[in-house]
Image (cartoon, rainbow, N blue to C red; front, side, top):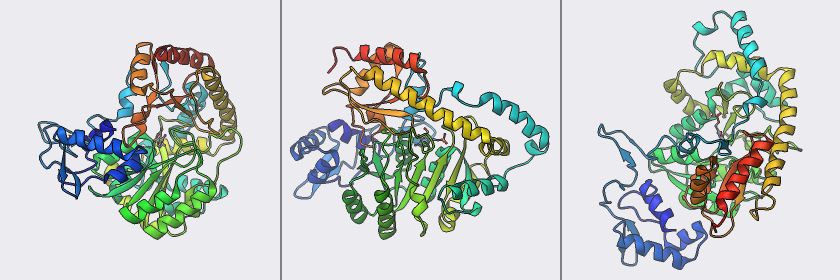
Length: 459
Ligand SMILES: Cc1ncc(COP(=O)(O)O)c(C=O)c1O
């Protein structure tokens, strides 16, 4: 609890001099007893990070000790700064050279259409010799956007090519949308847990995050409404379909209700969908964007997960006024996603071969998920079996700390993502994310045996 607060202060959740949430609000947010919060506040007061004001509450001390200044993060000698202090907390883990990599929600390259794409790349360049000597337009290639709009219309999404922008990965879409719509000091709702680069980006922007728990059956919408009404957040970043890291899917009735709340409280929904085609049985519900008639949703659609992460082709869809706010930032960022990747993507995506690839992939990925569940079945650990996506969100036995388990697993050459990395409050030490997409069944069993060996004697 103190660590979550300390980290909130370190990462600029509250500015110097700002009042932090009351003991009651913080206890509700963290799901702990009020006395626990009070004890934490007093400890941080003793450490000089907080100041108590009679009857008014606790404030962040105006002169925070060096290196801990709220919002500053790491400062280099030339004055530039980053709020997360590292490129991204997730890439720190990905950089570790390990034999059993269950930390990356990426597909095994042997399951991707690499050879076909390589042959195709030559054909695409040969048939369009001017391709490499031309810039794309800012919004992306017109032909691709037309084709994608048609494809999405077939899948219950009413939109035109003018409402679609090609981005260099969904990650760029997030960055553009956040920067276009948020100012330092603004508030944003964010799922707890969430896709960790979103936390890093919002911290970097000096945005105050308001966490909303995601559960197997969605969100506590009363809490969402209370936060929207009381805090007036500018946006809500959500990943409602085979959510990363939990695998949960928000039900249809909540999707519709969220749209109503967004309209009522003028809160933009940034809907990030990277896994929706990777379902194991039934397709998931339509995206929130399908219900967006008034222009409150920015819909991000990544295709890195099952075509070619190396191409970094994704789409950002929004109704025209919202898109008009984001477009200038895309022009400044790169002037348009490289054309070669867009053409190559188009030639594969709309082929019959793609549908075959996807059907086979769903079977292969679900077999890997089952292999992971089988390997963990005697562990006593628990999880909700996901209906799609690439990750298992596992609850550890009481007393076992995810970061300590990671240290020990890394010594045995096995990696996963510890819960706190996905938590805007830096807690969730009782959770880990295990990705079943990169290793085959045999290597998953070997890797998980190492993680279980690392866990022996802990907890
Ligand atoms: C929820 C979510 N959003 C966005 C991304 C990034 O996608 P892209 O490769 O298109 O940038 C990922 C990749 O892991 C993801 O899981």
